[in-house]
Length: 205
Length: 205
Image 1 (spheres, one colour):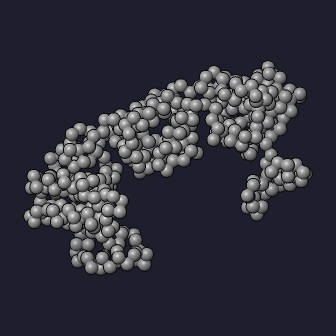
Image 2: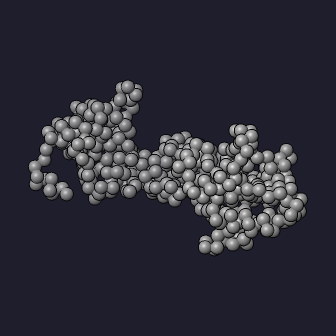
Image 3: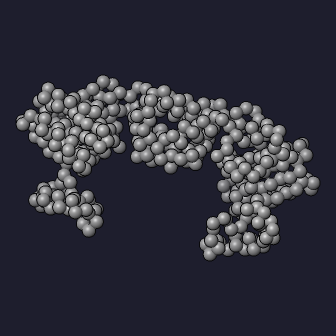
């Protein structure tokens, strides 16, 4: 693409660095911003750079935070002795959107994957174990990817936990709206093994 | 979506204002920026707000420019007596990408569309006429949308031009790689009427 303005070209190049945004889309976004008020665009730029420079990570659970401790850990209405272990911030947002969980989180930052060179020491597992021991956590819920790596991670962490802690994982099975014939055999087999009594099924709807 | 950080939420809201970017995509972009170096994100914010505050429009052709005059108008290698009339900046970029045009442009900012309340006075038509008279332009090429509104605009401007100016429009017909059976009747009829001698067809390939 040929631009007659270096300012325009630089802005397009910056947008095109973002994931899933090609040069044509970047140009569309930049031309949209060009039509907005100067103040609004200034605000856009400031909010984005402030986000990067001022955001912090919760010292307790590694979730994003505006201060030392995130708003979930700081909330005394939530069950602090219950920890849901997730891979990343996006999973926290997804689980929070269900409005079904009233405990706290621990973001471990990925799953153990030797092929990708990710071992337990690269993840926030030590802080999780320490936190559980220190705080006298009563329940740990794993909400990790349903993959071999996710299962390995669960197995690794679980072996390090005190026996007094109740350990569970989110259930796996056929998704709502999913069709049996398109489910893979592994999922179908598991959902048969872990079949639920009808009462509990009805009450969760 | 529930965020545990106001900084994150503000950044997502800003991205979600952009056209074609929903909240999930906005979150993906923001989390990507969160992983980048602080300097790079700072640079992103600065480039975007600088683009809006410092960009100017060419006083001669209304294209984007870094100064009073855009780089196309300032380029003495281009045929200044030849003007291609386009609707917007994006059309200039598209035509420049062909590397087939060596004249100048005039961005009129849209087409005459009474139903949308756009009359000739809202467009940069007066400056075009004045420019043609003042500069002694020899050729005007219209590259407007192939719609009723585009044709109306061409007709309106053409009537105001001196007889000495050669006036043309970019050709309309079947696109390269297009298939005859899927072309609309209007396009097919026009491409029959404006059929080309084989020599000129071959030489333009």
